[in-house]
Every structure is written in C-alpha cells, then in structure tokens.
Length: 290
Length: 334
Image (cartoon, rainbow over all chains, first blue to last red; front, side, top):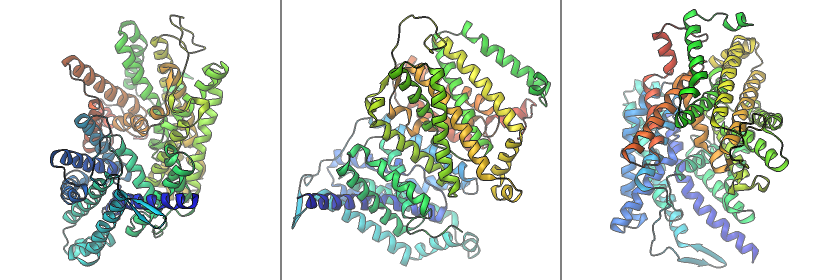
C-alpha cells in the first residue's frame, strides 16, 4: 500500500510540475532572448488566473477552453510592457532592470488586491472530483488534464521557435544581437514579441493551474520565486531545462508534502536551488556562461 | 575628533546637517502622537537603508533578502526576553553575531562559488524565504501563531529593557541613524571603502589590481547584516509581536531597499532622504484616503510601486545626487 501511495503522489507531483514548467518556460524564453529577468512573472500569472476566475463566473467557460483567449490577452500585455516600459532599460545595469520589474510586480499585486480582495478564489469544474484509475494508480482528472495541456502548449512553443520564420528570427536575436541588427531584423519588435510569448506562456499556465490551485493576490510573488527556482535548476535560458526543472520541483514539493508537512514544501525547493547554485550554477540543461 | 568627522565636508553641508539634526532632536516636542510614529518609521527605514546600502551601494552586491537579518535580530532578542528575561541590549550581543553568521553564510555560498548579479539576488531571497518557512515551524518561537512580548501599561520609560513610550524609540532610532551615517562615512573614507567601490565598478579589474575581492565582499555582507539585525531588535521591542509571515516576508526586504534606491544608491544621505520622501508621501496618502473615507488595503503599496517606477525611469541615480547638485553640495564617491 505505501508503495502505491508514493507512486500516486509522485505522479500528481509530476503533473503539477509540468504546469510549473510551462510557467517557468515563459521566464526562460524572455531571459534567453531579451536578457531581462522578469521579476513580475508570477504576478503576471495571477493576472491570468483572475481573468480566468472572472470569465468563469460570467460565462462558466472551462479553463481549458479559456486558456487560448487568456494567453492572447497576456501576450498583448507582455508586448506592450516590453515595448513601452522595459525596452529603454535593456542597456541599463542588471539591478536597474531588476528594480523596474520589482516596481511593476508591486503594482500588479496590489491593484489585484484592490480589485479582488485578499480572499482565495477558484473555479469549480464539473470534473473537479473525477479521477482515472490505471492499475494501482489513481490520477485526479484535473491534474491529468492540466499536465496534458501544459505539454501541448509547450510543444506548440517549441515548434514555433524551431520551424517558423519569426521563431528563427527571434533565435537569431538571442544568438547575436548585432548580427540580427545588421541583417535588418526589427529587434525591438522581436523583443516585444518574445516578451509577449513569455507572457502568453505564463497566461496559459495560470489558467491551467487554476484547475489545481486557488488564487490570491499574495501568491504572485511566491510563483515568481518558484519560477526562478525552476529555471535556475533547469538552466536559465534553456527551454527543455525549464520543463525538466518544473517536473523536478513539482516532484520534490509533492514528496516533501507527503514525508514532512505540506506547509514546509517550499523549504525543499529552496534547498534544491541552493544545491544547484553550489554544484551546477548553470543548471541541469544550461550551458556554461561565456 | 570633530575635525576628523568634518574633514572634507563643505561649510554649507555642515550647516544644513546641523539644522536637520537640531530639527530632528526637537521634533518630539512639537510632533503629535501620529507624526511621531511616522518619524519613527522614517528613521527605521533610514537606518536599515543605510545598512543595506553598504552591500549594494558600496560593494555592488544586490541583496533582496535583508528581511532575513531583521527577522533573526528580532526573533533572537525577543525569544531571549520571553524565555529567559534577558534584556534587549544583552540580547543584542547574541542577535548580532547570529545575523552576522547568517550573512557570512549567504556571502560564503555566493562568493566562494562565484554566484553573482541576479543569481546572487535570488539566492538572498531564497535564504530569507527558507528562514520564513523554517520559523513558521519552529515551536520555540511559537511558529506561525506569533511571538508576543509582555507589555506593561504606564510603566514609564525603561531604556535598559526598551519598554516605554514612542518618544524613547524615536531617540533610539535617531541615534542609530546618526551613528550609522557617521560609521558609513568613515567606512567609505577608509581603505575598505575604496576597495568596495573598486569591486562595485569592476570586479575583475579590482582583482587584477590585487584586491582580495572575496574577503572584502564578505566584510560588506557581515557588516551590513550585523547592522540590520539591530533594527530587528528595535522592531521586536517596538511592535511587541512577531510573525514569520510578516517579519521575513519578501515585501519587507523590498521595503528596506526602496529608501536608498529612491534617495540614491551608494550615497550617504540618500537612504535618509529616501526614507523621508517615501514614508512621508505614503503616510500623507494613507491619511488623505482615510480622511476622505476610502479604505483601500494595497493603495499604499501601489503608490510605493509607482514611486519606484518613476524614480527608476526619471532619476536612475536617485533623488539625492540630483538634489545635491541643485543645492551645491557634493558628496564623496558620487
């Protein structure tokens, strides 16, 4: 019996971890191309979660359906944010960019607090209490759908960067900024596009995550930290790394929640972060910094 | 002694500083209860801002986890008082080494393994968060249900046990701010100060010039964390209640860094000016909103965010470097 319990918790942790990975993927894409660390990442995710809550209470749309329009809304938000506020900062020192995004994060958290209040909100789907049984394994339907949706979105993003012309152009900007300018790419537009894509990722992740967790304004900073822990574990700027890091952290949290107490689970992900920073600072999939 | 302190300061700056200090000393005579609590907050932020500035402003290491040192100072002194009846000034002798040790731990992890820049900032957040969750589960300090200090009503001012009126806390914090200001000034004028500035400007060049960068970055973290923990001790005895969720929270760390950033990173007067501007404006906003009858939790933080945004966009070096040029005072190291 205990072996099955561990297996069930591990699978649940991995599925949640896939959604974490999708969230962190957005952060990694933004850093990999624009070289700006999005300190407002978790806060942007809570925006998506609240949009989903609002839409759900108005139209009772399933989060998996709302995922696409909400990702589009967040894309527009990210595009405008990069073009309007962040772009003048890309040549400024690191701490200056960091503080700009801290300011944006503070504003988002507290505007959400004013609009929605401090209480936890969620969506109740018809399949909230369903589960699948595969042999000895019992999987929550919400977590199974969430993990699956995260994989689909991540795959779409991978193929966009790999096969489309715009995706190739964005990768060119990331590889060689000056070179991209020389061949006539509109780098400013491509940067805004990338930031928008990163925001869309986190928008989709937030909508999916609503199947599993409640949202309060205060969860924003916690998700930002979680995203950092994941991308540093997986390798900042590496797309597969973000997903692998997400799964690893999801698994760690689930196991820590089972073996110790759920409220102490974040201590263990910070522990993983410290270990990674010490022994493999570039992350699991990261390349050594030049 | 006086000659050394005033060495290289223009007459105009001295007169202004003396006037400010006189006004600050006389303030409790004129200020009402509310204004006094605002002034206490201002000097609290001026003091911790000065301490944070040693790391970021002088040595160029961005710490976003200074709530860790405030919390360790607060919890150590409070727990010693609650459990053993040990007063805050003796407690300080335990709290400061503990915080300094924590600072040394963070510094060692980071600098020995060449964790720098944004990675360093995230490491400092992670350690502070680790402490927050840890203290939530530490029963000796009452965990998440909070640690409360016994309060006696109308027992008069007891400076030794830090039990007393806001006026007493005001003078304690004012003294701390003045001492921190003078201490930072002499640090900045010393050999170590020049080494720090060299590291901040270009670490590789500093190392090439023969500066033991690891050692001096460690010195910066240890001094900064030790200084910050004193603010924590005062915090504990002023508020008389401690919750890990509040004391160690990331938003506390961010509050600490706002004043020196708005005032001017790396300047001596910046943290003080920044604390006056931010706390002053925020309290004006809160009381105005309250007077109009609007109760919006979060409005103050939105205001902080907008202030930070505007300052970073318009005056990336902070208000003080701009203001000091306007009034014709030049600070060293600018």
